[in-house]
Length: 201
Image (tube, rainbow, N blue to C red):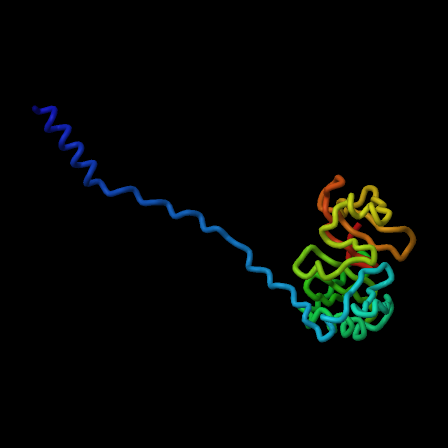
């Protein structure tokens, strides 16, 4: 009987004992939502922008007629031309410590235009919202696999690149460069660029 009473007391005390406080779950930090690409310039419905080793080509969707925005044109001309299709610029910035010397940049969604001495000298397309609006004349774009790209162009791997899986399309000075996300034929293009860029090699 004494044992039964003792057991009952232990059970009662256990029932009265406050439940241990729950440790609050670690707060998950989430990145702010990435705004959707605009592509809302006045000529967005009628004009496509093609990536080129000499600059950017603006193509009339109905006639197929193309005009080149060549490297070397004034900054204001380049910004106006792209804004006409891509919409208002997201930001302007600069970097005085680029490998190629001080540079200035204007970004429109995934596309960044590069400037030196107030001249358009290069472009860089990242794997971001809006990237799907751009491709080369042969259809190479962000997300294209190495195997698929190799069907239409000559892919030249850049040996010992400090940028990762770097490659170029074609040869000579007016080439389009890029980076694959990983090695192998199924790897997808993660970035494309041409002209002068702020790279450190």
